[in-house]
Image (cartoon, rainbow, N blue to C red; front, side, top):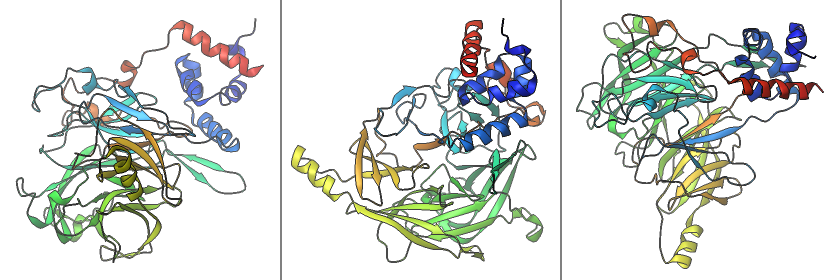
Length: 471
């Protein structure tokens, strides 16, 4: 009788790296031998090479938060035709989702939220306000790690998550993949220098930064080359682009429309002394002679640059890419390049004619990372997809909640499923006495204890699928 376990390692690897990604990941649960083969860097590199040779598309889905019930996340995959969203507890494997809902912000239950993303990794927090317990997770593999709590807790902050890619490609005659098993990441929290002075203009603010390289939080007073009001930063979840994190000003900002960027890896405390650390900052103003306000900032993956969406009171939408030349004295030396411009005014008139209602409130939700011309918008409690170059709209679906009343915070997070999922491993800080995560928030638990092995029938089905592949 034919038995896969009788095959030598090199032949079994060649078989397993040709099955779909989901099945290949599940193979790690079949046996210790299969786990060792599939988790080996050679297998991952071989699998990536075959995915590249076969030109397998990289899938993207959008994770939407639900302001009415933060435990009810929902997602959508936009293909040739729109697919309606589904209520899904996508992060139910995280400890905060397994605890009862909080009665107040001081209880241990909390309302888990997503506050950042990078490719297929998510940064989640146990509570909306007074954020303290953070988790890095991969919703595809259900691996997670709990971060130690930051040194101080504040009601309202601005958060950012930045990470190195798990693998890099080298463009030669044949694509070479280089794994970055010890990839680094940072979590950045921006807060006013003094609590209660969020509405005062200041050239200083605090930055609390967690580094995976040290496993610790650091808190510093950051000197800014420009004064601004902290409460004018509209977005509570920053956007990562080219090694920096960006936040942008709100529509009501009285100190102009701008984007502020911080490099969490550029600390040079020796140049300032005292408690002031010199992180590299940059301010980018909106294009000159352009009306409207900054409604959305994202990343154009294909161009590898920052992308911005401007809205005005007449229903005009303008999208710009920031072409970065060089940076001098903490000022952006690049320029904004117009990608496309269109108007939603015809939609306003159509609704007025059809329903007798004039609705001109809309907001940008996210840029599509797999299609540089598409933007997700919400208008009249419906989600639309806009092709900014063609000026065409597609009506998507009606979400279970409306985002328009939200004044602060990102509500849509694009999750890019890589050819091979980014692993999330346990680190030293979860066992450190000084940075131990309190029990009930994932500190003493390991990911191996949260993942259940497939039942025997599931393993038999998986092996049968592989045998079919061989035939």
